[in-house]
Length: 357
Image (cartoon, rainbow, N blue to C red):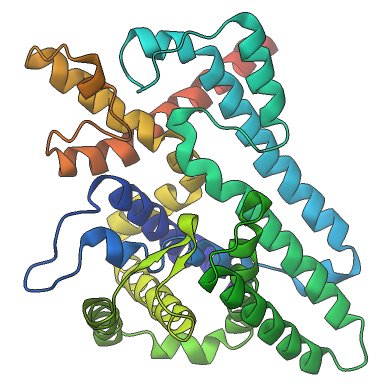
């Protein structure tokens, strides 16, 4: 399975990030014949699928030096979040003038410096980076997994301790979230993710067998079961506000959602064109998460200009202006970040080429 990352797990990540985009612009759209919205369906799996993939690619040898794994994660996630925060903070006044954010406050230089410094602690994000609340939680979840995995592997009975660790994390996390306890950096949500990473790690060990169980009809069935549960149960899964549907149902629904993503990814990987496109989307999932709100607002700004809408509150409404452009928001939320990152890389490559001449 090592050589399948781009054609399978990157596509799983692509489905995850597209689901996040859909959740942010299509949440209230109802699925025909069911009392379930698109948002409720995609929210049942769209964050935890990233932890599953992280666990899938976690290497056993990391347990010898988990601090190296944690350090790399921190540098990558923290560094990119700091960079994006810095750019959007510097652009804040311009975005206010263009009515592309709901804020009407113009930052002073001291305010900008304060915001940039705060972002070093991963505690502050500009409005259009609102989806990045997930990144500190993701880092903490992967770090907790690395520490727990390392401790278990260094014990005399690692298999036994891996199971105990999963049960303990799940129990504490389900209790904390069901009681609506809120800790710094959404640690209560990070705790939920550790067992999911374990499932991803052990799924890789048995992948030759498990892969055969991922079928097109299983994909349809898993989606149908999730929809059936959501249709019958009050509430939904919304991890940013500690909603887990029900303590007994969170992990079953999450695993069904991950299975759905793997089945859909398997089908998409069979066509070379869809495989190539969705693999690229998966590889750039970080940037899509950071920039898809900007994509929404670009659509809003264009629509407002074409139809002569001047109401700043309407244009700047977050995360989008409710113009009913759901498909346009999804397309822009994925393609605009892809285009921006591709363009930036080409400029960097050209600059490097010019420097060498």
